[in-house]
Every structure is written in C-alpha cells, then in structure tokens.
Amino acid sequence: MVPLKRRKVSASDSAGKTGNNPGEKTPTRFPGVVLFLLEKKMGASRRAFLSQLGLKKGFQVEDVFSERVTHIVSENNSGHEVRTWLNSQDVGRAATAAAARLLDVSWYTESMRAGRPVDVLDRHKLQEQQADEADVVSFSLPSYACQRRTTLDNHNAAITDALSLLAENAELSEDDGRGVAFRRAAAVLKALPAAVTSTRQLRGLPGLGEHSLRVIGDILENGASTEVESTRRSERYKALKILTGIFGVGAKTADRWIRDGIHDLQRLRESGQTLNRAQQAGLDHYDDLHQPVTRAEADAIGEIVQRAVTSASPGARITMTGGFRRGKPTGHDVDFLITDPEEGNEEGLMPKVVSWLESQGFLLYQKTSRNSYLESNEGPGRPSSNMDRFERCLSIFKLTRKEHRAGADGPEPGPGSQAENPPTRRWRAVRVDLVVSPVSQFAFALLGWTGSKLFERELRRWAGHEKAMSLSSHALYDNKQSRYLRASSEEEIFHLLGLEFVAPSERNA
Ligand code: CTP
Ligand code: MN
Ligand code: MN
Image 1 (spheres, rainbow, N blue to C red):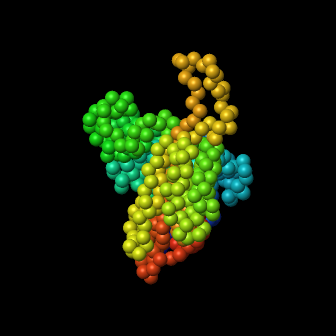
Image 2 (image 1 turned 120 degrees about the vertical axis):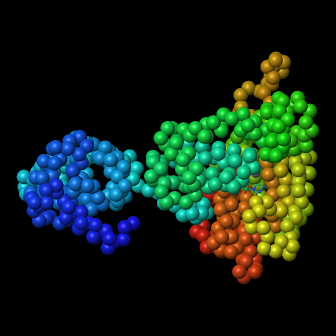
Image 3 (image 1 turned 30 degrees about the vertical axis):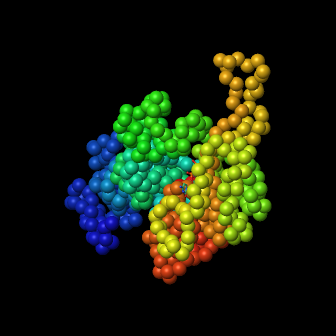
C-alpha cells in the first residue's frame, strides 16, 4: 500500500503531466472525473486524437493507467476483455477493478459533444458476465478449520481430491508434515462458498503454501495437475494404496513388502508372508471392506450393537459417531460410542458386548484393547496425540442381507443354482469401531470421535496455540490454571475453548 501522503503527491504529479503537449493544457474542469482511453482495438492514433479533444475541453485524460482513474473508455472491446486487461495491470488492481467504470466510447463522444461528462446510462456500460465479476471477488476465511463451517457440499471437489491425493501420498511415505499441509490446504478449499476460477481469488487465505497454490493453478489453467496425475499413475503409489488398503496394514509394512517385490494382493497371497490376525481378516474380506457402507447398513448394525449393549447393561446407550454423525451418506466403517448413564457401570461392559456379538455370530474379527486412561496419571497429557486410551474394539461385522436390505436384493439362489454360477452371498463384511466411555468423559469422547480427523487436529491446535489448553477425547486441561475443565456437552467444550459451536454436519473439514 502506498502511504496516503505519497499517493496524493504522486496523484497531483501525474495530473500535472497529463496530456502530450503541456502548451495546450487547459485547467481541469471536472476534478472528480479521471479518464483513461484503452488503446487496445481503438488504435494509437485515434486514441491520441480523442485524448487531445478531451484535454481541450477541460477533461482529465490520463496517458498512463493509474489507480486514480475513474472512467475507463474503450472501443469495440467486451467487458471481459477490458477486465482481463485491467487485471494484468499491477497498479491498484483490486481498487480499480472494484471502483472504475468500464465504458464504451459512445459515452466519451457524447460527453465531448456536451462539453461535460454526461450521465452514465446502461447503454454506455460494458456488459460484464457474472463469472467475470466473481473472478475478482477474493475469498476470506479464519485460520483454523474449527472456526469454520465445512458442510458436505464442496464447490471445489476436483481441487480438493487432487490435494487429498498428495496428502495421502505424503502420509503413505511417512512424511506427515507434508501430509498435514496438503490436508489443511484441501480443507480451506472445501470451506469456500463457491467454485474458485482463479488463484487470484485465493490471496490472503490461510493454509495455502506455494506448493498447494501451484497445484491449484495447474488445475484451474489446464484442468489437471501433472504432479497429481503422475503420482496417481506411479507404481509405488498404486502399490502402497493397494497394500495399505488391507485392514491391519500400515505404511511401514507396505513399504517392506514393496521392497520384497510385493505390489498387489496376488503377489502377497503367493509370497507366504506371515500375516497377523487383523491382516489375514483384512485380506480375506478385502472386496467387501472396499464397498462403501451405506447409511441403511450402518443403521442395521446400530440396532445389533444396541441389542448387545442392552443385554450387557440395560441402561447403557450407543451413539453413532464418525462420518455418519457428520451426515455422510456412506462410510468406510461404522463408529459407535457406548456409555452408561451410571458412572462406573461402563467398566467391564466391552467384554460382555463382544461376547454377546460373538455368540450371535455377528463378528468375523475383533480385537479389544483395554482402557488405559487414568486422569491422575495423565497430567496435562499429550495435546497433539491422536490416540485416546478408551476401551475399544476394532471389528469386522458379518451383516446378513436380511439385516441390511430386508431381502430385497435380487433373486435368492434357488436349489438348482449352477456351480459355476456362485450363489449370491447372503452377507457382507463391514468394519465397525466400538468405543466405551465413562459418562463423565462422554462429551469429550463424542467430540473426539465425530471427526473429521483434520477438524479434530485443528481443535487441538487451536486449544494449544490460542488458549494454552490441552484437548483430548478424555478431557480439557487448562495449562494456565493447572486444572481440568469439566463439560457435559459438546456445546460447553466449544464455549470453554472460546469457539462458536460448530454442528457435526459442519465439521467435514
Ligand atoms: N479416531 C480416533 N482414534 C483412532 C481412530 C479414529 O480418535 N485410532 C477418531 C478420528 O479422529 C475420527 C473418528 O474417530 O474423528 C472417526 O474415524 P474414522 O472412522 O477413521 O473416519 P470417519 O470420519 O468416520 O470417515 P469414514 O466415513 O471413512 O469412516
Ligand atoms: Mn468412520
Ligand atoms: Mn473408524
């Protein structure tokens, strides 16, 4: 920004220089009107002629474009063409784009005839399409995803998909810093109220580094980013994606296998690698676990889980968390939080729930880990740690068709069905996460398990950096007061953090 004083000086300077021939200069008669004639299409000689005419009649006609210009006059140009030219000028681009009028030469010639600037009528104005207007509107957003409302309607899916792929690739290569950077950039684009058409609109937005901006620019200009497309096609990325797509397989294991020449499921099966129980189940149910889980299937599983929980403790209740609580129509799994209104009753609940489910034949796989959270041992805790220490069960459910589609899924296999025509399977495998929380920690657990993962990360970053607090799925600790802050609802937690409440459906960052 040029300081006001300097701008005034340079303004009068350039007014003094107006016109090509100082000898012919007439004092300005209309001080609020600063004209600029666009040479494009008008041509240099006609422009010089019209300029001289204007100067003689006492108009300010600028030779050089500046932010003082109030009326831009052109001939045979569309509004879009003039706007594009304007945007290519560095001088006071934003201010000018917003303030100066784009006029047809007819306004100028009529004003010459009248000896004064005539009223600007609609027919004098260059028509600008809506898209051109939107083009110069910049977006603005608060820095932290937890200060924003991010619903599922994403106006920039092509860009956010591309940035998410780069994030995923970084995470698979165990470059978490880069992964988070791309996730943050994607989250910013998800939160915009409209589609981006130019990187100029993104100036001043948080979370967009040079790298992300380059990717976005490529997509806007060429329809795709070469970096994203070459990553997507790379053998390493494809192999990592397939192998870590097996439940129980992380980036480290996948990397080791790839170095042993294992790039796909068939090679893995043939390799004789020792798989742990989770990985074996993941491999056995690979196709099912890659089928999105529908809301109807999630609800059917919810009913089963509620029955299991009720049989273990009649007062206990379940809440569906994760993506479904945020309103997603499908998910990669179903997440449930279990609690009992009677504090202490939740102890020993998980083993009973699991053994009920097992006895009914609902579990294809399960692994339960014990609750290891003890507030007295925790202290201020590890604020950035994503892991909580609730009693939890990672499982694979066997959902029969009756339970998830009420038998309405094509013909049942008849008694005479052909051997080479395998009978329609009557069940599918679904990943299910169960977590048990004491009711005193329920609000924190609910907030922590609703996601999205980036939203959670941003909440913890906000708490730590802006409030000197440590947030986990168990508690909120105030580092300045050296004490825990209690809350019995998500609303209270947002309030304690000094944030406006963000509804689950707005946490899709
Ligand atoms: N979560 C967690 N600790 C884990 C795994 C998950 O706290 N070890 C939390 C995540 O922070 C997230 C929520 O559980 O908020 C749900 O995680 P997940 O099921 O992986 O993702 P969803 O958002 O439910 O997405 P999807 O629909 O693909 O399941
Ligand atoms: Mn989930
Ligand atoms: Mn989950």
